[in-house]
Structures are given as structure tokens and as C-alpha cells.
Image (cartoon, rainbow, N blue to C red):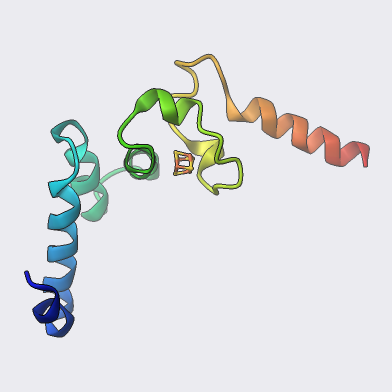
Length: 101
Ligand code: SF4
């Protein structure tokens, strides 16, 4: 859908066009996460996985080693266990540092 026409399109058409554009740049292996999340037919965990995958260019290792510590999804990002790292380890440190203050 052309940009000018999209601006005056009904909301449903705008949403469909935006989502189609996003899927066009999404690898087949991750498309199901997006479709399920948009439909509200998955867990919040799966929706977070979709967001994280897109954020780092669909590189699972990059999610595990993500340094976006200020991101609200950081503690919930997938693939931490596989990399032998858990955000909760750092969260415990932050909490204990606050307790020390
Ligand atoms: S936790 Fe990291 S990979 Fe996931 S959305 Fe935030 S910055 Fe991106």
C-alpha cells in the first residue's frame, strides 16, 4: 500500500499493511511468533521473544548477550539459560546493592 493512501486508509488496513511490511523482513523461522502475538494467541514470553529477535537482527546469541540493560524486557529476554547467563543473577546484585545503600 502506498504511503499517501495508507494515511487515509481505515485503521484495519493500516494495521494489516504495517504488519505485512514487518513480516516481509522477518525470517520464516520467526514469523509464527509475530503472527501469534498480533492475534493475542500466545504467551507474553513468546511476544517478548519476537520483539527481542527483531531487535538484534534475529540473532539468538545476541539476545543472550544483550547489553541493553535499560530495556524493560532485558530481564525477561529469551535464550539466557542456554548461554549460561541469567538476568536474575544481575537483578539480585542490583537488589542487594540497594539494600546496602
Ligand atoms: S532485551 Fe535486548 S534484545 Fe530484547 S528488546 Fe531489549 S534491547 Fe532488544
